[in-house]
Image (cartoon, rainbow, N blue to C red; front, side):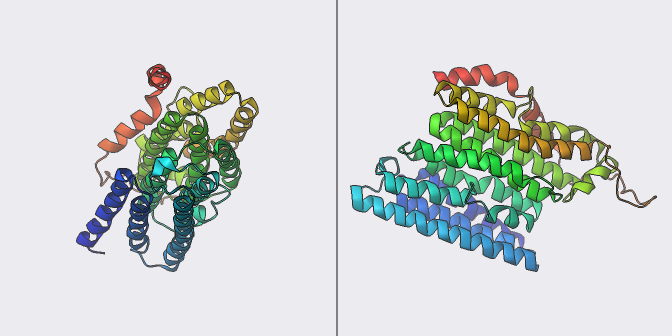
Length: 348
């Protein structure tokens, strides 16, 4: 694919999301999401091997089904209430259908089955776009929908945390592990939408930061399998030393940045009071922590490398500028001291 064509599709991705952000009308927001979907599919098949074509087909059918459901829900809302404005969707039936359609678009459980298979068949750059940028438009619409049915958000969130934890067990492909990690993190965001929407925005920011840092690190290491992490020390010792901080931050361990949104969400759940939901979410997050620790085990020289003697990769200078990666790694590991200021802002 030529650079001009690639730039056109990337610009279309940005314009589609900006159109959704700027829309107050359901139909215009729907059009922005569709522009995003149609702009990503050519990027998926830029390397036209059979798995990429299969992944783009699965992605198209899943997104088309969710789009049809979303359009039907907005039409139903206009019939019942006479309103097309996004914040004025007040009837329970269209509200629930919109939430389910948007949950399918971003891959919340139990409407998640397309996401791991699609990400597994893509390259790391396209997987980064699918895991981060493509979530912004649907999550913005979910943020705008009034909390007519908060129990639906809680159910989808709790299921996603459990499925995201269980699905990552015994996975050896890094892209599938990241896909199930994305499902689990989106579950935390969905639960925050039910109780405190500004807290969901904080969780989204931390998720975008952590996922982007992880993908950039895997791209720098050119690692797609868990066994590749065992010899990453020979390729890039500095990245290997910082990768555990990224993984443990994604797992939500203190004193790293990823602990902040989970801590605040659990505190808000206990205050609601939804103590049982908070306990289930905290216990289910341990499932995700297991495979983060498994990757940590693989990347800290404790797993024997599967390479013949004398074939270690050369330690070459990185081709890309590593300044952005250094900044994102620092932010992923060291933003927890800002938690009191964030908590003051959320409760103000």
